[in-house]
Amino acid sequence: MASDLETKAKEAFIDDHFELALDLYSQAIQLNPKNAELYADRAQANIKLNNLTEAVADANKAIELDPSMSKAYLRKATACMKLEEYQTAKAALETGATLAPGELRFSKLIKECEERIAEETDELPKQMLKEVTTNSVPAKEVEPVKDAPVPMAVVAPPKPIYRHEFYQKPEEVVVTVFAKGIPRECVKVDYGEQILSLSIEAPGKDAYHFQLRLFRKIIPEKCRYDVLSTKIEIRLAKAEPIHWASLEFSREVAVPQRVNVSSVSANQRPVYPSSKPKRVDWDKIEAQVKKEEKDEKLDGDAALNKFFRDIYQDADEDTRRAMQKSFVESNGTVLSTNWKEVGAKKVEGSPPDGMEVKKWEY
Image (tube, rainbow, N blue to C red; front, side):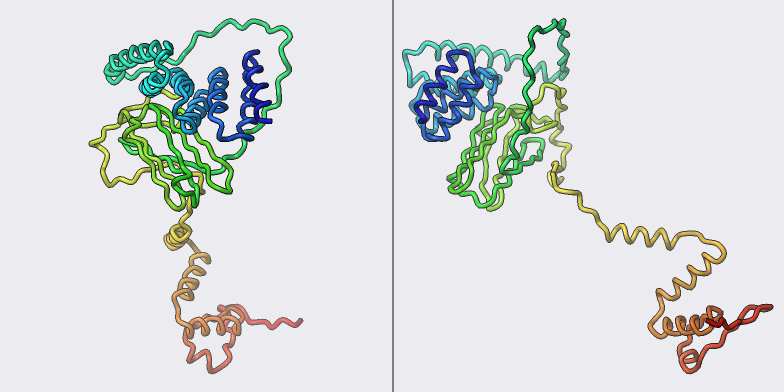
């Protein structure tokens, strides 16, 4: 069954039906996940569809399953060059060239990578002196489209198995993937100049693949990761000490500002985005409300009522009982704080001058 799907995928690729080829290769991989050839061929389909980070991930998987497959290194290099990851591409090409000495494409692409790296090295100081970006593209004249195809319904991408977040320091970015109880041997992390690829294949759990083009370049040999009991922590060494506006690359984001490392305190805690709800300090809010009530300026009956309320709030048990008993028994005309006096007898009403207490009949 997997071989039939592979044959159909190759035919679709030859006919330039790259999306169909990609889907067929994916079905074949589900049936035969240890076939390096399928991953290398799916990488080529991803390259044609400009799914470059996915192509790198597929090529890495093919290399992992069969380190002697020269075309897997070629696929990885091709995708990395399109991502402007020339150092990573060159390393893959050099390895592939040792496996296929007669293949001229390797030497040709290695030379191209060396030229690109030289250009990049020459332009880097200029970029540091004047960080200006012009992302505007001249608008092209829109031509009417005849017989335009009916747009297909967009299906929302599936929710990822594991949540991730990141924070940063001047010299590194820390990516945290919240995956509990994953054995270290089930985790594989690959770094490119500007690519991060994470694969988790734990027994009894769905495979998890996370790859993206990073906001800026990193130093792969200085990157590392730790597998903890509740999470996987990946530390990416920045190639430049600049602030990342996001984790993933975007052409719409302007060139970031450089960070002055010396101005950042060593014990300053990093701030990072989180999907957790912000915690509200209700005790602090209650104390603030009480303070506002205490400082409130009142007049007339309101001020008198507040005065009695404050006395009652700060009084002991006997004083409170005296105030309650005297107020109730006198129909609100007497308020006493002396329990020894009030507790021994009934409190008679004492109306203001010119008024009399009247007993209502029900």
